[in-house]
Length: 149
Image (tube, rainbow, N blue to C red):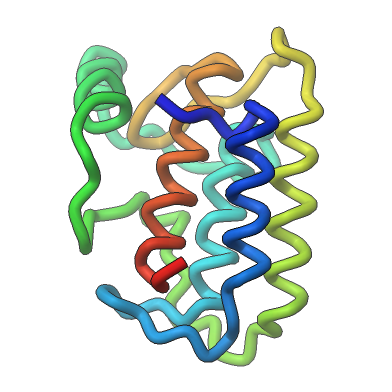
C-alpha cells in the first residue's frame, strides 16, 4: 500500500495537487476543490494533534475498521466522514491558500521522525507514523480522483 512518507508517493501526490485547479469539476460529492483541500488538511491535523476530535467508536471497532476499510477495502464515492472533517459552509476559501497550506501540512507530516507520537484518528483509532502515512495517502488519492487528478 502506498504511503505519503515514501518519497515517490509524496512527489506524485504533490504533482497531482499542483495539477488541481479551482475550476476542476467534481466527479462526485458536494465539496469544491478548496473545501476538499481544507478537508484533507484537517485529516492530517488529527494525526499531528493540531485538530482535535472525539473518538467515534470503541477501540476494538476502530481497529477492525482500520484493518478493513483503512487498509484493505477500496474507498467508494460519498463515504461518511468524521464530523470534524466536514468543510461545508466554508464558501470564500481561497483556493491557492488552501493548496499551499495542504502541501505544507503534508511536508510537515513527512518530516516527522518515524517514531513520532501521533494522535488517534476519530474513525481508525491509534496509529503509528507508517499507518498514518498509508491512510493519508489513501485519503488524498480518493479526493484527488474526486476532481479527476
